[in-house]
Length: 182
Image (tube, rainbow, N blue to C red; front, side, top):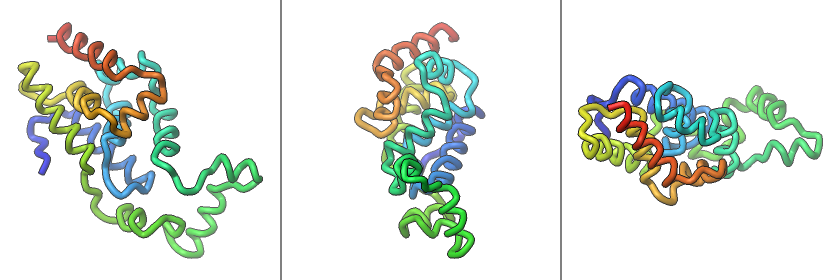
């Protein structure tokens, strides 16, 4: 179980927004990619600044996540055929209920509790280790981002790489920012 007592307000808000994003995207669990979006959404400190300076912005990252996560209904492909996926989804949901086009796991997750996936748990554990290694008493959004960057091969890293972000360079930049603010 992940304990949030040591999380600052910005780190908590990042994780809470991660749950919101996962739910909105109808993903069955919270992944590190959702936590990354949470940092981009809520934080106004060095973590978000480092991401924005690296060329990552929230709307584009959210859109790319949908593509990288393999959304089963490709809105662009359907639009090229003259089909508006949003209109189709709305009509189907009016007739058959919310999430009728989603698979069973996604429908179930969208309504109930969303658990943390393996990647999100690992990233948050790495965030704690980063804070401890830096001698900090609280886990800030910067530590959360460092934890995400430490999860090599994750969807969150693929998302960052889709923006041509070098995770190692971003990690070094963020650690420098943390040292400078200490």
